[in-house]
Image (cartoon, rainbow, N blue to C red; front, side):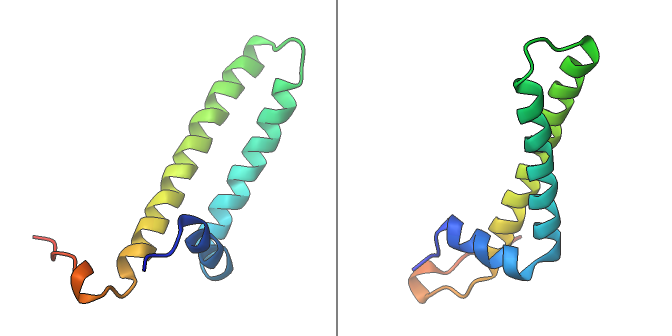
Length: 87
């Protein structure tokens, strides 16, 4: 039975330094975005920063998803779940 993404995430948080670093950076960007979104008015620089932070956050999320898929791909599977070998 495949593990849930949340379970895989927890395992990676405990065992994978790169995943830990990505999650930490993602949380830092989220904190800054929360701060910016709480402001009534954003300067042009802050608007640009907000867009940049959102793109960086999305890129980090994509990298975390790759690590999760890689982890799931390395898990042993039963005969009915055999994966074809890459060409």
